[in-house]
Amino acid sequence: MKLISFKQSLIAFGVLLTLGSCDTDEKLDVKGDGVVLENNFYKNETEAYSGLVAAYDKIGVFAGTYPQSPLLFLNSASDDFYAGGSTSGDQPGLQVASNYTVTATNIPPELWSNYYQGIFRCNIMLQKLPNVPMDAAKKARFTAEVKALRAYYYFDAVRMFKNIPLILVPLTASEVPNVLQVAPGLVYAQIEKDLSEAINDLPITLPTSELGRFTKGAATALLGKVYLYDNKKAEAVTQLALVNGTPGGTSSFGYKLMPHFADLWNHANKFNSESIFEISYSDKSNADWGNFNTGNDEGNVAAQLMGIRDYHRTDAGIAALLPDYINGWGFCVVTTQLATAMQGDPRFASTIMNVGALRGNTSIPLDKPDPTRLITYTDSYQETGYHFIKYMPVNADIKAANPFLNFSINTYIIRLADTYLLEAEALGGTGARAQALLDAVRTRAGLTSVPVSLDAIQNERRLELAGEGHRWYDLVRTGQAAAKLAFKGFAAGKNEAFPIPYSEFNNTKIVQNPGYN
Image (cartoon, rainbow, N blue to C red; front, top):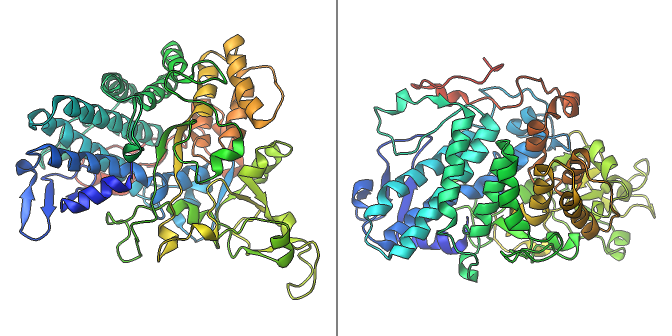
């Protein structure tokens, strides 16, 4: 995870891990006195810890890269959001996801390469750790964390691209051209193996200084989710039940639903009782355009991109206590489909802002009085009047010289409401426990019970987890994508996987996904 303590340690040791997607002859550059080759590194626990830092670092790209954030890309591809931005040409990598014109040459290549950079770093660690002289218990924990990280990277990669290589050891230059893709089932089997082996050597709880690292509960939750995607529902139930415990209560791992849905989006409530796996971002790195995406970035950039363009409160808006949101860049405009689905739901207020209504009568010029005008803003491309606010910064969040790249707003990867609904689905959407799991999520939201069913669970996932990066995956795995995304141009038999970037075909045997040739 992008823990500030991790990154500071890495900088302090003077180590920069450099590699590309399946890069070879990896080096660890030490500033000042030359180059330390990878073969001469990992001599002690300190250097092993630096390798662990590097293995974790790629997890932060979820919301911390510009513009190829998986969070923004997946939201744009879903039925809940348009890419937005200033124009149809603003960040083309997001626009092509939103309108399903994505090809091998216009998909952001980092969506693929970042996962394989993470995998490569994990493979190096798993090769080196057995020979590092260090405390045995700590070595076992490092090994478990790296296996869990490799599983995480592969899980995202196989869900996004489906037909991918399964690389488990560092590759030499001569081996790279012969890498082949494998059946998705083999990737899932390796993910399940890595997580199963990792769980026992991971801690149940973490001290404050280590928050963001893998725990036993996080790996168990991820394994349960993987089993569900792999259609191993009984195994999924077993793992997810361990994480969830009694619906509405506190599980053996210490997880408990936050009392109020809005509490989840108070950005001060980091690593709360509902958080199972969370990415930590920082405003301490002072990343700037000159050093961005070079290892210096630690902030939540997606928060800036999803902000409302030229947002400004009028005096009436200030009196009405509307949030003092930053001026954002207008990406991930909420579709009317999601806004309509959430009308009357108490979670609407923490998920969506109806900026169109707050702007008042647009026929009245801005220099004329309008008592209904509480805010002003500039329309995004494909503006609907609805904007996503779960991760929206306010001006008080600005701490760094360049705030755009340095917002300290964490993002959830897995939280308890997610695992409640996953378990209810794995149970077949029927029975007393599935009903109790669904009811717990709805009760916390201030809603009454509805009869449990697979449809009810999927509807609840959409409303509860809106904008958190799950929706596109949910639609694809449940077979609903073609129908739900038809209005965006989704093609059945093709768009269930994204195209492999063109750059990956250079001197390799990689084969493109069906429909993209």
